[in-house]
Image 1: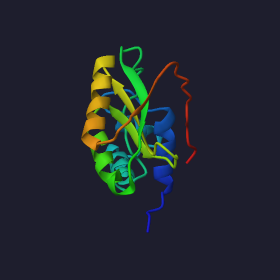
Image 2: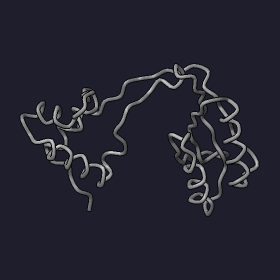
Image 3: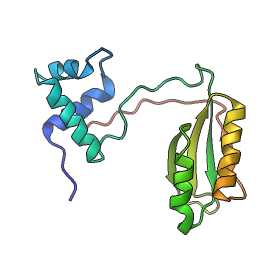
Image 4: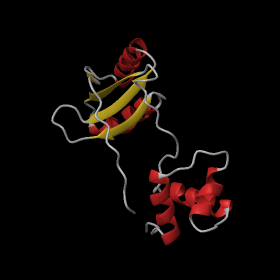
Length: 154
């Protein structure tokens, strides 16, 4: 049975989505904003959220374009018995930011890839193709980004 969120965990999730403090001790600042809790209490709640699958990642998001990086949305066709292996191969690249399955007639495993150069991006795509044994990789480079801000009211 899944652990249900308690009120403190909900408050922490709502707060860190929109107002994560940039400071040497951000968890102290979060504790203060939540009514004088301890830093350890906040950190333990975040550990629990992570361990129970409610929190996947806690960290900054950079404007990769501005930093000179290139990115793409890519897809491959993988048979059901090869999905786990292909996922492990794709996820072994630190440049892969997302990887997910879709029910598509041709391409069922999709992933986003951000690399420091176009050459590196194409090299990774070629390696994935070779290592997974797929015959084709759909490569849809970013032409223009449309970023939206998403907040979940927990």
